[in-house]
Length: 157
Image 1 (tube, rainbow, N blue to C red):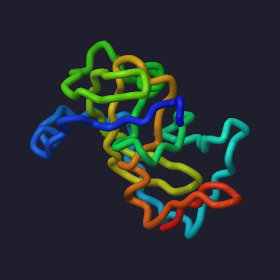
Image 2 (tube, rainbow, N blue to C red):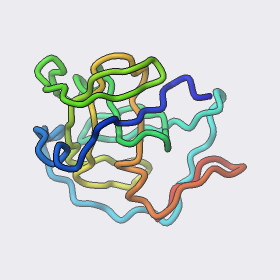
Image 3 (cartoon, helix red, strand yellow):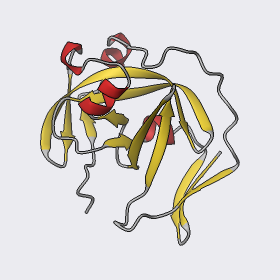
Image 4 (spheres, one colour):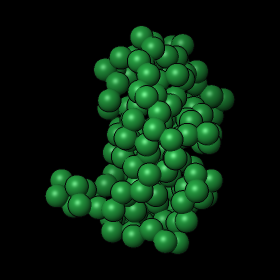
């Protein structure tokens, strides 16, 4: 079982999600680039899939987690993106491998993984208990397909 956290958002209604405060995490609007036909992410020694995502000019290491409802950030990674986690409104309750935690909604103006840049990606900052940031379904779900194969995780559009 993944030790690094499978996150499920509890009580995440569409109305609440639409009315939450949105924070732009990077300063420049980046045009959405076409997603390469196929991206391959090799399996790491620990059996997981790790990627570096670019949010503006910052690099964030993500664990690819198809069980995560949203892209989820640790407070340290949010801080690296210029957000003060102490000033966020933690309005959502989430479940992680370490138990329940509070989360605050943010929006990434752009998130690029392996050359696939997507604009306006919803994310959560998890107040406590998340050991690493997660690349979840608010990014992965906008791709046409992702699957694990013998060569690694394949993302395609």
